[in-house]
Image (cartoon, rainbow, N blue to C red; front, side, top):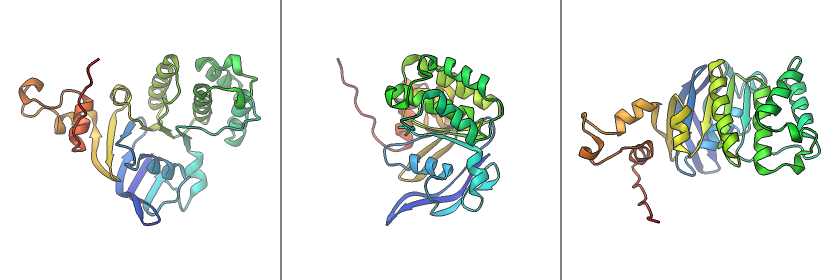
Length: 256
């Protein structure tokens, strides 16, 4: 569903991503993780067609984002970490506009369910300018779900969400995947990645340090040779395994 082959993204003389190749099949949830500046957002925005591709190919649903951008974008929904909304449109009008742009047939029932699921019904007639940070995030997520995308791209989607919103988002991401959507989530929340992602891609300085399943990551960078974590004295949690994968010392915990 999403396929990158030797993808590169450059900004002037700076290389953000270098010759990155990976695929996300329908039903898979890929966690895209890495330190700040690793190239995560550049990769996601390039898949969404927001940034230009400097090298290689990026395809969504069989369509090259450079050569055939319209059908590629029609198959994609993108939620940034800080969504920009139309300030004069109400919550309901945003969703109606999305349904119109993507030619969603009979969207009324779907809109009503999304408003209820994400606790936006009381704000149905409120303009986006009156929404809190978390509510704006919820509205952007609802707009993405309304598109019924083949590829769902989420860049730090938990930002601003309350505990209910986080739980609902995690549940609905899994529902999207079960329906055949290919999902890519960029996040620093490793516990969330472990909870819902079937695969993980660790980026470091624009290059892949690991690509595979969570179990494969643990096997490669976790406790070796059947030893217990205490015996090996190394990676016990996904957080520790992540630091081992990027060759970065794990910060020392601060006692209260």
